[in-house]
Image 1 (cartoon, helix red, strand yellow):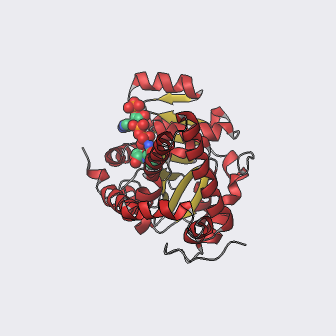
Image 2 (cartoon, protein in one colour; image 1 turned 90 degrees about the vertical axis):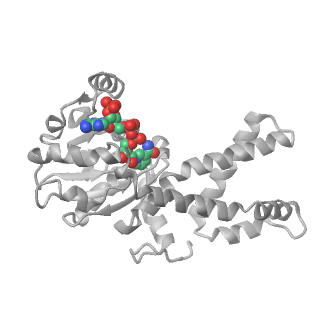
Length: 304
Ligand SMILES: NC(=O)c1ccc[n+]([C@@H]2O[C@H](COP(=O)([O-])OP(=O)(O)OC[C@H]3O[C@@H](n4cnc5c(N)ncnc54)[C@H](OP(=O)(O)O)[C@@H]3O)[C@@H](O)[C@H]2O)c1
């Protein structure tokens, strides 16, 4: 049984139960009925927009229910071909008749895009933004009164169905809007609901996190090479070890420190390795990396 371990996420929900609940959508199945009937417009079908769009199509959303837009005509042609859906450069045209408007442009572009869309958007449509840094209040102020807005922060492992997405709602959105967003992001991994005040922290931990993990994997693979393993085997071992350890944390709900203790035999080899990690300040370095990334996340909407 997962051990309750309260998250300080303002949701009042235990971490383990959050894991249980968010894991429910992970099994491979068709699109949730609540989503299957929706028409979706993706504004900014770049990296993350395309990942989400492809996942929805793979799960059975008919291509005819999807419209997408990008900035450049050349990019629209390329995306249309690779995604197999209508991609244009006319944002207002893309959102016409859409039930869900997924905004996937860079943070400084969100304001201008919403101002452009405003005359074409109604309260019956749900706007979901994946842009880092941009508050729901800022988005609501650029849309007609009452338009529901949900803010989400996915990460690149969404591309292989193992993503992590933090989701929060704006003042005009209700529980059913949140559920729609949850279904949408569960097509590409796990989800958690958080208070909006935590969204920059989500960006620093789970959206930037894959880069930190890749550096750890690269280092472990280098270490394998140093002790004599061929690079491909060392890389496989590092990645599978990280995957397996993560799976144990997710499936047991046990505190990582307890799991670490279980690997660490008295006077064995692991404790010698841990001593090196402590001397190298691995923990504090990782903590500072997430803190810095979360601080930077606050500024992205003002970036050039
Ligand atoms: N990548 C990640 O890991 C990640 C994770 C979570 C959240 N996000 C968020 O996702 C957003 C997009 O990031 P990304 O990495 O996917 O960027 P990206 O690959 O550069 O994609 C941005 C897309 O927006 C399009 N675009 C720009 N201005 C537009 C406009 N006025 N109207 C319509 N489309 C427009 C671009 O069109 P062109 O192709 O024609 O230039 C491009 O396709 C950011 O706000 C970021 O914070 C990203």
